[in-house]
Length: 159
Image (tube, rainbow, N blue to C red; front, side, top):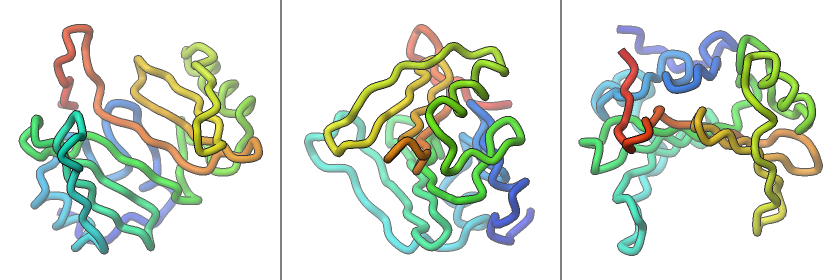
């Protein structure tokens, strides 16, 4: 198993429903630790959160990795502001909302749902694709994406 930390642009490729680079949805905490090392910070969910989870923050690398108790603490969601993040082979950090929508359209997705959030950012959401993209001053800042869930709300772990 590769134990180097993901740094190259190829390893920062977001694959919808699958993961990012060597980080694959469904990986155990031990598998993630072997790949990434110890997180700089571990956050536990609040008592009133809908889903009990742990977030492992790799601040220097620009990753937050989420493990839900309901999913036996397997990797189910990634949030990243890594400047090398790519989607469909294209760099997307700092792209405009329109550029990201066009990229998604070229790959068979709709325009997505656009909403201004309380913190002032604009969120572009693709519910079926399980990805939210956050823009500040019309530049993509960070992405939150997760494992696919079917119509019966069952997690669809990658093969």
